[in-house]
Every structure is written in structure tokens, then in C-alpha cells.
Amino acid sequence: MEDVATESNTVGCRSVFTMLMPSALRMALAGVTLGLAGASGSWKMDLIFGTILLLLLLPLEGLPWILDDAPKPHVKGEPLTPKNFVEVVGDDAIKALQSRCAGFAAAVDDATCRRFLRARKGNLDNAAAALQKSVLWREKVRPGDITADEVQRELATRKGIVHGFDKTGLPIFWVFSGRHIRAERNAQETVKFVLYNLEQAVRTAELRGLEQMCIVVDLSGFSTKSMDYEVIKCLTDILKRHYPERVGKILLWNAPSVFGMSWSIVRNWIDPVTRQKVQFVSGDVLFELVDRAEHPELQVTH
Image 1: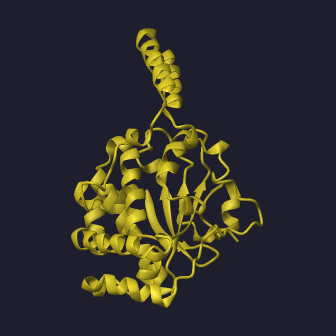
Image 2: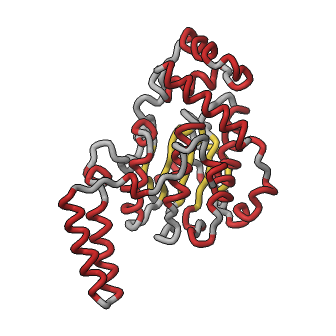
Image 3: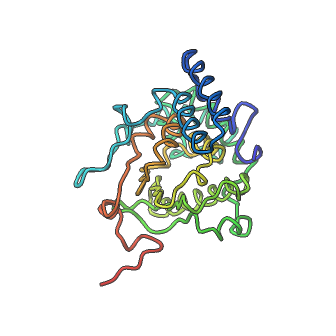
């Protein structure tokens, strides 16, 4: 997967455990728990001890239900407009960034510069470094050239598709998480499949004069066999580094209780501004934001 997801040895699919830094006390308790699990002789007790061990290793700040900035369920009638959704970037800043990236003229149009400047909070040095790395990554990976033939096996799973628009006009990238089975996938093919869909969504948005997309993640079939930390970490890195300001909103639909454990880890990999674009929705609340007819698999009766 390295050739798809990285532009240097310092960027890539870092292990989930490098993100977790428990205290000495937690490590001691975790060691005791692990010892008890090994001595239990019962798979049920092993499962209980394993759950306790994972809770001990999770950083406290990773538990979304106790955080003020954690995604809250969408309230009926409440607008879905995250903070800092649009930040004004002046023409002078754009010209300065283009000057810094003069060697990449074909890739530094005004809109691209504006997105990288917004994502880097207006810091010209950071935006220039990020944009140059992203241009090199695109030259190497060529995500815009990925064809359906290259991702046929992933397409056959029907785990993702760009289809329809939300009520604000953003194209929707639908993700059906329950159809992703970690043990059956090839990580590089999965990442390539997601890039194929992201590029489709970007092109669809730009045809409408827009820059962003809506991602709807259907979690109704989610289970532990669907959770894929390796792929998710790669994709959060790719979105952050190469698709800044491309995501307008992320709707997590019908999340089961088991998803809470996974989310407490994944949320730490997402930029705080992007986290504010995440909303948990359930049932028909989704269709206050997306017309039912835009769902790729629901039949609409009149």
C-alpha cells in the first residue's frame, strides 16, 4: 500500500498503537488484565478481559461521549454548517502561494491554492510545503487516472459509490461499511478504490461549480470484522494531505453501539475542523439532509 498512500517514509499507514499513549498506571493495569486473560481458560472471560484491556489502552481524550467537540446527533431542523466551513483567503495570499510553487504551475490554480491555504490556517510556508508534496504525490499515484477496470473486485462488493446529491447540491459518496470485510480485502486495492470514488466526486462537484462533497457512511451492517484501522488511517492521511477542503460534511448513518469503540480511535486521526463536519444521524433523519430518491439502493414509491 506504500506506493498509494505515501509520499515519504514519514507519511503513511502508521500503526494504531503509535497513536495510543497510556499512562504508567494504565500500562500496569493492562498487564494485570492481560495476565488474567491468559490464565482464564474460557473464551468468554478472554473476551471480557480483552474489552477491559482495550479500554485501558484507549486515551481518555479518545472517548467521544465525554468531549465537547465530539460529533453530536443531528437535531431536526438544525442547519448542518460546521464552524470555519468557509474562510476567506485573499488574492495576495493566493498569488504568494503560486509564486512559491512556480515549478508546479499546472497544479496551482486559484481554487487549489485557496483550499490549501484554508486547510493550513493561512500559513503560507505550511501551505506551500503541503501543496508541493501533494503535487508530487499526484504525479506518482495519478489518482485521477484510476479506471473502473483497475478496481473491479472492489466495485463488485458494492461497498461504495458516487451517486446523487444532498439537499445543498453536494455530490454524495455513499459508503456501505458492512460490506467491507477486513480479512478479505487487499489494502492497496481498497485505497485505490476509494481514490477512484473521491476523484469522481470531485469531478462531479466541479461540473456544478462546487468544490466539496458529502460523504454518507451507512453503518447499519457494521461489525468488528468491518473495522479496518490500517486502511482508515491511510485514508485519513490522504484526505488531510491531498484533498484539503474537499469534504463538506460526513454523515454517519445508523451507527450501532459497537462502532463507538472504533470511533474513539479513528476520531483522533481527523483534523478538528473536519471533525466538526461529522454528524451522527439515524433513521429518517438522514432524509432531512438527503432526498430519499438520492439513495442508490432505496426504491421510492409514490
